Amino acid sequence: MLAGGVAPIFAQTSSAATWSGQIAYEVVRKIDPNSMRIVINGEQVKPGDPNFPSDIPDTRTFGQKTLIAGTFAKVNREGENTAVRTMVTLGAAGPGPTQTSTAGRPFEEQVYVDLAAQKSITVLTIGKDKEARTYRAETSITRATDWKLTDQTKKIAGYVCRKATVPFRKETYTVWYTTDLPVTYSPINELTPEAGVVLLIESSREQFRATKVSQDAVDIKDIQPTTAAETVSADRLADLRQKALADFRQQLMMGDRN
Image (cartoon, rainbow, N blue to C red; front, top):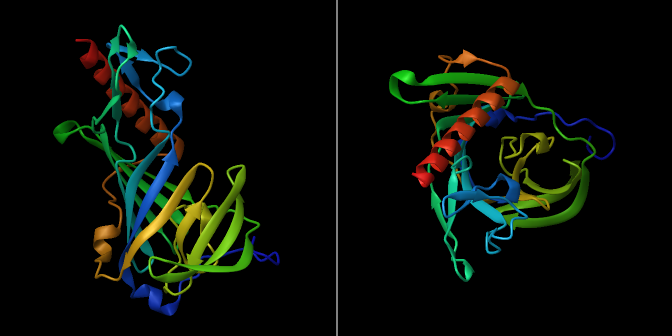
């Protein structure tokens, strides 16, 4: 809840129905070493192994663009689920330089937000051509409570933002949002304010920073999810995504060994 015990709601002004544009974010996330695939001389190594390289980056940066038209938003994440291959050659003097390459991803994923109905819609396509299967899952947005607003302000991407702190994911997130735009949106659904657009989110594990906000003509038909998909639960969609990633990584591993 916001300060004063008032539960936040999605507030869309009368002009929100006609506003359209794009917000570009730079996203930085800490990497869990246990989720990384490190291959040395064709064999995968994990943290704790004496040959595990010490020069692996501990963060990953990717771009996110959000298209908004009226009460719908479409989120395009560049490289979030891309498989990254890290190769190290083990020589007489120990591990050599780390070489990282991008190996693509085994599916296409689109994320939409119905701002009026307060739900997130994910469309996942696995496979190619005739073998492709498309799934759709919807989840209600449950926003974090106990927002604490401050009087601190700063300009981000050309807009004056106000600072708030919010308990979320077992720590305190810092959220900067502007009310100078007629829509209400946040790159993390749970951290959506009562009214306004979030342009910066900071925590010990991740950061979303808006780099550009532009008002462009966006056709709402282009940012609404397809209905030609098999509807599944959010848990089922997560299982399908993880299996596709695991199968893809196994294929990469077999290729490295051959």
